[in-house]
Length: 183
Image (cartoon, rainbow, N blue to C red; front, side, top):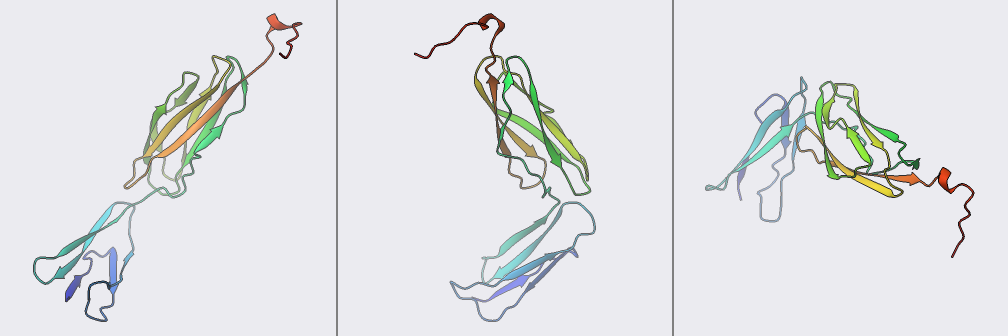
């Protein structure tokens, strides 16, 4: 099969490949694409592969800034807290690149003992934002909330986090002096 590879056309992408032999089914050419931006933004180009007949290919090439240092735990265990008392945990959202990214928090599995704020915001350029989770148990139980964090960047996958909190069993003044027996 005789093919012609037409490389990327913009100055930001450099395409290299070596055409050593005639391409037969089962073999492939390796095409390398280098990227050298001059600013923080979205870039697009494409590689065109012309084949005999109408079997032409258009291979899109995208480049864009992303947050590569965002670490969201999948599970957080909060310390036990007394009934109707509260404990909070801050989840830092850091960005090392010079542009900001918007974020949204979607509650997947809600629970009345938890509150999360803010639900939307911006991670500032080369800065930090925080999501604060507050747990205030209303019953003697172990509770869970699950939320999804979505960052406004191309090709992003949402971060899923489950937070567990427990109510500390403290003796009530009404029960003082009462001995509980095992049965």
